[in-house]
Length: 213
Ligand SMILES: [Zn+2]
Image 1: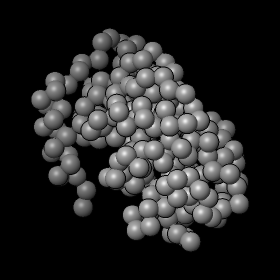
Image 2 (image 1 turned 90 degrees about the horizontal axis):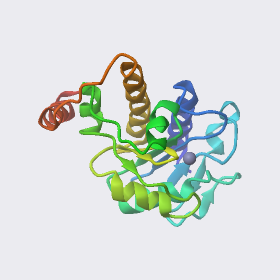
Image 3 (image 1 turned 90 degrees about the vertical axis):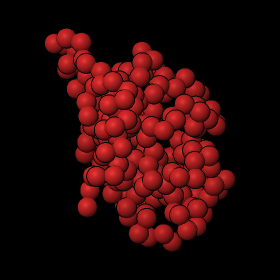
Image 4 (image 1 turned 45 degrees about the horizontal axis):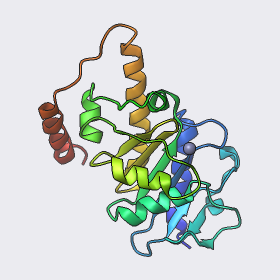
């Protein structure tokens, strides 16, 4: 079932190691099928290089396995909480990408210091509280603190991104790490200049309507 979405989700999961966003088996991408509301997610603890499209797990909104031989990602409850509370979201990504997570460990948001932050996130990338793994706490923290952004840092943990599609969520995960790295490099030279809120808004609106084919 959902063969196309499984293949897409598998490919997008492989983007995480390709873009140096994860180490070993950490990180995960899921996608929600708009027709059936079923979610395709990566299995837990399988090496990325061994992962095949048919290894992807299909779960329903309650977390019951509909199809798949492996156990789903340990972060499945978090993904499902986000989907249940954000009907606009059809893709969720989680990483511990190091530059972005370095902001999370000091509890600091990522300020809009390049135009791409305005384009993709429409403001600073917020940081949510520390939340325990395993239940609904992480999902709750994401939904409560992400606002209109497509990315959020969770204190002492890492990065969660969302999108209208899983591809958009993966793009947000790549961009948030890239920007965090740029800020880190800039700080070796001086204080990064933050783009004023009004200009962030203008740039965001322009990009949302003008970018792409
Ligand atoms: Zn994590």
